Length: 375
Image 1 (tube, rainbow, N blue to C red):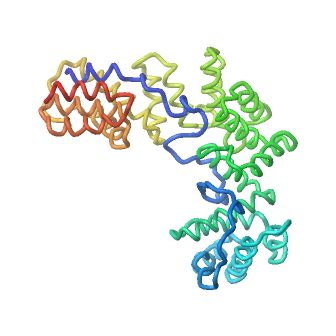
Image 2: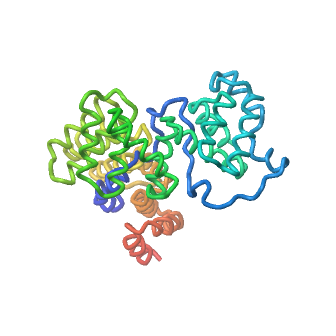
Image 3: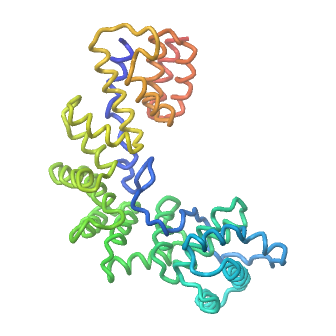
């Protein structure tokens, strides 16, 4: 019973990652990413910032992907050139990149009849390799695709920049392209991404304007749900709750956006059926905070029944949802799970969970206090 009462106080106290950062979706993979977009690549350095060592023929081959991957990609229709031609192109690309001259990227692509779109796909193929050299070449190929105006590469690089530091030199070119696409081409996805960039730079009002502009004509574009959710988070922070609810509702009900459901759940009466429905939709899409909140609700209802649990499984769905979130490392759920184990006499398990909970700065004081009480 004490576990239920103590845990309930933590429900909805912890803000979501998106609400605190409001830049990227959290804890699930977006279904809006186009199938042909190259995988995300974490970038840290600008090509050409140092003089690379000369590459021998043996070294060169270490940068290249297995021919089988290229053959499979050709067979699947992902690339429009033969595997051997792609391999020869990558050799030429890497050699040219060692001593770059003005216009070299465009020239090597024209010489081998490789489009910027194919360039971006080749970057994705290279990035599948575990070799550091292959991933390094993947980075260079993706940067070149962006420099040549390939939108998928531009988007990938800018989103990577938001996570790792958008002011790094390597992201200057992609950022210029995003602004061009947003301001001149009126591309709604580019507008949404520009909003994320500005938000990461703490330019909240300007970010809001771009998020709103991106959805003015239509919400039928990649990232529309993100645009609505970020609008809602900003509007909510400004105290404009009715407008925030409208945008969260659009994200959830029109676009089936998981974060939209999470935010809608917070606008419902605590413990109401509507709140549970929204939380279930968010949790089923992998939103860990929603799993925690469902667990806390179930724990609250369990406490009202005035039943004494004999095993951890007696907590039913309260344990199920809390365990899912705790396994994912969500601190408040780790703490709640510890309380549940202590209630049924599993003190060793409870103490192990408290030790894990202490790694979360937000709940470390509470976890440490309980640990002292239980030892």
